[in-house]
Length: 401
Image (tube, rainbow, N blue to C red):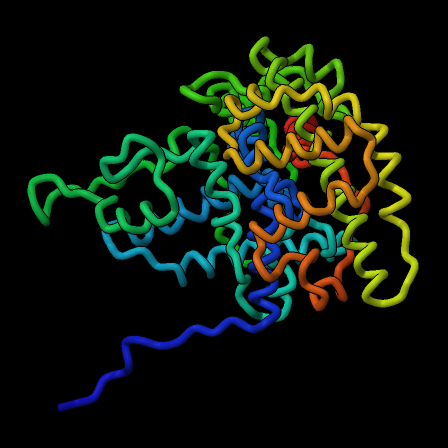
C-alpha cells in the first residue's frame, strides 16, 4: 500500500505570536485598558448599545469593505466547495501589501498606520489574527452581511465557513444553471483593479461608501432601531468628550438617560483603577525598597475629580441596564463607600485585593510579587466606551460625504 502524506499536523505559535494574540484579546475585552478589576461587562453593555458593531481594534473603517470584497472574491471562485482559509489569507496578504506599499511611497510610517498585521507581512509571515476576524462583527451587526444557510441573521465567521459548500445551488440537478448566494446585499463595488497585486490602495472612504455606511448605521441598533452611532454621524459630532452637550443633544431620550448612567459608572471605574494602581505601586515599593509615587500622587486628584459622579451612580439602575453580576455590584458599592468616607488607601486595599484575586487568581498583581516586577501602567482614566475609535469613524464618514 502506498503511503500518503500525513493528514494531521501541528501548528505552533511563537512566544511573540502568543503575546500578540493575547494583546488583541485583552484589548477587545474592555476599553483597551487591562481589566484587572472586571469592569468589562459595563464597558461592553454601554459600548454595544451606543456604538453597535464597533471594537477597540477597529483602526481603519474602510477595512469593512476590504473584508467584504475579499469574501465576495473568494465566493466567486469557490462557491459550492469547502471554505479555504489559505485562499482568504492570500487575498488579505495581497491587499495588505498594496496598503503597505502605498504608505511607504507617500513617505508615511507603518507604525500607527492602522494596517492590520503589517509587521508580519513585512516579515513574509501570516498575522496571528486576520483583519477579517477583527472586522467581521461590524459586518454582521451593521447587517452588511446577509443571512445565509437558513439562518435568521448574518452568520458568524464559523457559521459562514460551515455553510460555504451550500452557497451555490443548481436548478434542475447537477447540469442546471448555478445560483450563488449574495453575501452582501447592495455592497458598493470594489475599486478598479481590486485583484491587482500592485497599485495604490488606501483607507480613504469614497462618497458612495460613506453613504452606504450611513444607511447601514441607521438601522444597526437593537431590533433595527437607530443607535447613537447613527445619530452622531448624521450631525457629524466628533467632540473630544463623549459627555459633551452635542452628544446629549443628538441622543434619543433613552440614550441620554443611559449616557448619564454610563458617565457615572466610568467615574467609579476610574477611581477604582487609580486606587488599584496606587496600591500596586505601594507594594512594589515595599518589594524593591523604592519610592515611586506617580500613582499615589494622581489618586487624590482623580478621586476629587470623579467623586460627585461616582457617588451619584444609581447602582440598581446600572445593574438593570448592564446585567452586571452581584460581585461587581458589591465591589462598586465598596468603592463608593470608600470615596464617601474619604478613607485612606489601606481602607480599600482588601476589597481591591480580593476583587483582583477572584478574577485573576495567582496572576493578580496585588498577590504576585513576580508579576509586579514588570508592571507598568499609565494614570487611570474613565471607561471610554470606544468613543475614541467611534469618533474617528464618524470623522472618516464626514470627510467622504
